[in-house]
Amino acid sequence: MTRVLVVDDSAFMRHCISRALSAQPDLEVVGTATDGIEALELVRRLRPDVVTLDVEMPRLDGLRTLEILMRDMPLPVVMLSSLTEAGAPATIRALELGAVDFVTKPAPLAVGVRQVEPQLVAAVRAAAQARVPGRVPTLTPAGREQAGVRAGRAHARANQAVAIGCSTGGPRALLEVIPRLPPDLPATVLVVQHMPAGFTHSLAERLDHVSTLPVKEAQHGDLAIPGLVLLAPGGRHMELDPAGRVRLTDGPPVHGVRPSVDVLLSSLPPLFGERCVAVILTGMGCDGAAGAARVRAAGGWVLVEDPATATVYGMPRAVAERGLAHRQAPLPTIADAIQEALLHR
Image (cartoon, rainbow, N blue to C red):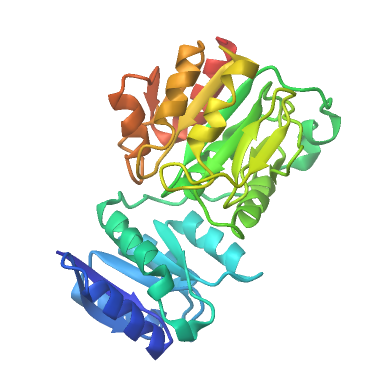
């Protein structure tokens, strides 16, 4: 039985969330809190397995509460976020601080959580199985004056590609990998993070702020050039066309998700062949395994995150258990492993 603490300043939302979770045979709501101060007290006393945490609260808000939890009493946290101009950056910051996942609050709130109940229940169950991240690395703005790639990179189509796929725990993993890549990386970098529309723009902005490589949310028609990181927009599949340009589509979800890692990876072998590196990081499910098989069959390199650091070792496991991975590496060494793989392509 997974024991859950529900934290929200709205009595209505506390009731709705508690009712939705308590209806599941494997979940038990052991307490509720109205703000961060009360939440910290209850975590110390009740020792829940998972906390659902609102971002906007009085006295002590969700982000500050999360920082204290990750520092003093690390445990899996699922954020309840608002899809607003201010809500998306706050959510990305929460994931960076160590929250396992997030669920967007329904709008208007009067509808309760029924429309997001499946996502909420799935997120709590996944969080209960997740590895709680360790110390959060301090990220500082990239030295743009040292990153000549931002201004001087020729706009020629890349002849090498790095494709990164991730899901639960992915934003924090990306924030550890992308900033470690050098400004003279000779490949284009294409990223699929399972995330709803409205949040990937903020994730791209955050990655761009702390990386020497330029990072942007991909747009239809973008050219995949060396040293550019393109992040698939939430809710849309991303692939490359025969000319090496981004094609965004609204096709059916694959493995229940859109964007899909498999969709991206499947488009790369005709363009890059053996000059492609596929990287599968933390996440639930098996998205990326079929695409990794195509990359490997074309002579490309497949790298997966080690279970010792993966928040959820689902997607990497699906690749590793099929015998598709050339190498398994812990998160802090992924960037170095990518560069080594490119040297041998």
